Image 1 (spheres, rainbow, N blue to C red):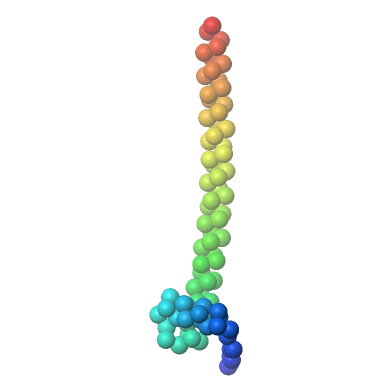
Image 2 (cartoon, one colour):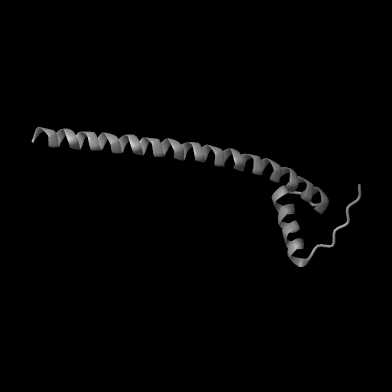
Length: 81
């Protein structure tokens, strides 16, 4: 499959950046490597988002437990008076 691109100056800069990142001299190879890396990065990002969501849920649960404990201790201290 042949692919012909007519990139804008901004896109040319992007391709040059991808060539540096992928350590490729060929624009075509750099673009393909960049696409493959993007696929992996997006998967990792989704996994990280999922882990962050789970950690936030755990933190919220811990905060509720701590708040309940503090309230109970305060009630116990007031009960003795």
